[in-house]
Length: 293
Image (cartoon, rainbow, N blue to C red; front, side):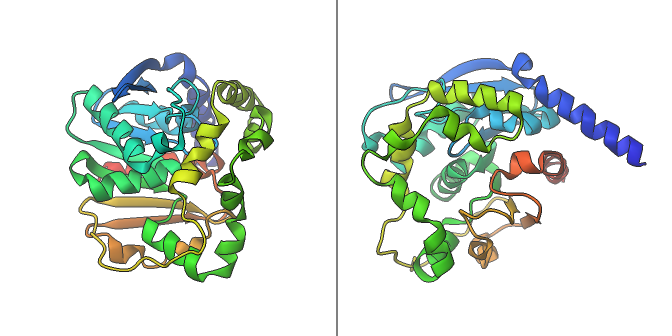
C-alpha cells in the first residue's frame, strides 16, 4: 500500500511539473484591463486566484489533479506577470479585483464557477461570494480567514496585530523600492519553480502588488466589524496551514456562524502560508473529494 501511495504521489508531482507545457493561455477584459489566465482540462469551470507574492503557476499541482474532470482556469491577478498593470492605487480597489474574476467567468460563457482563492485571492473570493453570490457555485479558500474573523482579530488580538506589521509596512508609500524579484520568490522551495517565479515577478509591478494592501487592507486603529453578516449560500471548503505566521488560526473561530451552507474546515499542522504547495497532494486530494460530493 505504501508503495502505491508513493507511486501516486510521484505521478502527481510529475504531472504538476508538466502543467506549463499543457496549458493554453488567454485573456479576459474588464473595462480595458486585460487579465491573463492559463487553462486546461474540460468540464465544470473552476477559477483559481493567487495571492501575494504569487502568480497562476502556484496552482500547478491542483490543476494537474483536477483537469481530468474540470475546466481549470488559473489567473494572474492585475499587476502580476502577464496581466495588465494599471497605475494608481484606486485601480486595485476590491470591486475591480472582483470584477476581474467575473470577467474571466463570462469569458468562458458561464454564469457561475467553482472559485478557489489563496491569500489575496482568498479575499477576492470571499468578496465575490459575499457581494455577487450568483457567480459562485462552490467556494474554496486557502489560508485567508473570513473577513469578519480577520477584522475581529486585528482589532482584539495582540498577536495578530504584531504579526500584521508586514502589512503596515507594505502600506507605506514607496515601500516597493525594498522589493526584488529574487527576494519575493524566496519562499518557493522547488528550485526549478523558483526560477519561473523570478521571471514572473520581473514582469510584474511591485507598486501594483502593494496597492492591494494600500487600498484594501485594514488600517490602524483597527475596528472590530459590527452589524449583521450576510450568510453565504454556497458550500465552503477551507484549508489553513497552521504554521502560517501572517494569518493566525484564531481568526477561523466562528466562521461557521457566517456560512449558511455546509462548511468543511481542514487544518494542516505541517503546512505554512502557502498550503497549496506545502501540502500539495493532500490539498489536491481533498479538493477533488469535496467537489465530487
